[in-house]
Image (cartoon, rainbow, N blue to C red; front, side, top):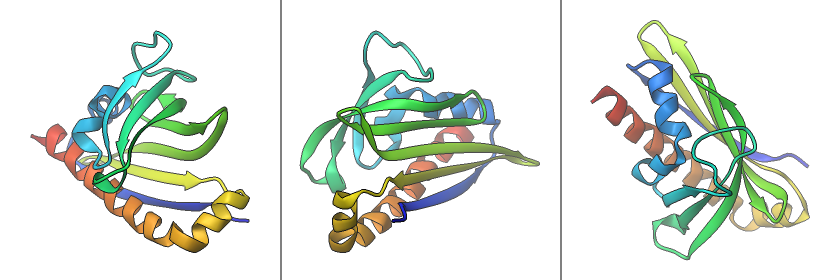
Length: 153
């Protein structure tokens, strides 16, 4: 079974390090994400580090339901990439990733998601998955455009 995945890329006229600092400080998430309106580090973590945990406060589809998700940082290379897994118990159910690629005029920032396939996900894909994928693609672009406005402003 294949995973459901997608990505969006936006070019930003700013150095990768400055963009990475904004993205990797998850306390900024609420400024950029259409669905996650706040996030906070857990277990005494004070900033991005591999394996650090945080929780995000999500308003699904910007209307509800509202719930907390626990996440773990899975990629953390300053100026290059930042990623995290959304956990259900100890299992990753969704993976979000940002890759920053320097260009002549700044940085290409790619945000991607991958939902790992399991029987539950297979069922979900049949019933709501394509709508969710469209939503995620739209939200990723919106998130990146908001980051771009800040780093270029």
